[in-house]
Length: 365
Image (cartoon, rainbow, N blue to C red; front, side, top):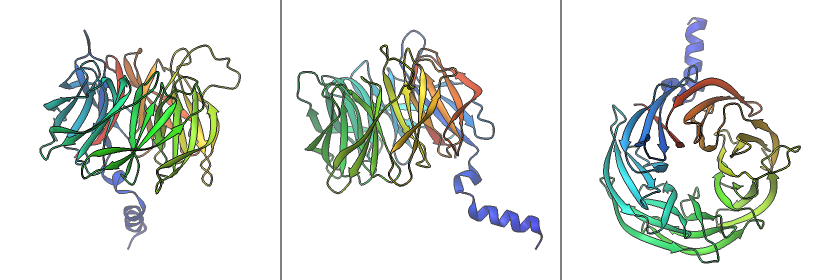
């Protein structure tokens, strides 16, 4: 057997399947609708060079500011922030176009975040105005069914900003910015019910917005919108308990804060890095390395080239590229990720999209 054939056989064994077959990803982009934007847009990311194709309208729906896939990738769900509804849309496998199946009320104002649980039987969403969360059934045809649970947060100021289901699919954790708390619910996926379980208090004035799980499911990283911080927490999956272990600023050490807020938290697929977006006036992505043993963070630096009011951003599954939605910039830009340091390098690739606020990747079959 020749050396060339041996090398080819070796690469087939050691190269992950997604790198063997996948050189492009479909990218869905949620937006705030208005005079220009009409709903959810789509484009393609080329993994060979990080370039993006032009964006086209995939499906019309009102202000789909956050998106979540069904595990089958046959359906996508969107919050409709301006209408206080949640929508279900079917995905055309060949074209990527979306067809609205139905919508259900979110039972709270300004739904701003949602997830689909691991069984694909439930959509869980957080309502910003009034502070609440909801669990809605997903029918076998992808449509949204009845409301299984609705939980109203209680306090002087309540703002539900995101909801996250843990790796075991047994607990749902809802960040309430106004309460400075992460409210923890026991989650029964079979019945779709949320039952009050406990509360994690973030430092006063944090304003917890979004958080991301480490791939091992034992650590969570919460961004503080109000004080521009990231809070690292240990997570006991058996008990459904968060324990704070570290708080770091998302701003450079030499910067004196004047306003501003954070938006999104994303952990790299390798589990080696975590990123947080800083909005106006700082307009940057903060970069942190993760200690492989303790999962504590060390600040690496910031990248602000071309960043303008960054809302949600996402890293494609191979971990090579980050796409940042520039809400006020009217575009989505691409950074290449240094696999050793986590640092971000501009690629000069971008796509024009009106009011982009959410980025989601899907395999192209």
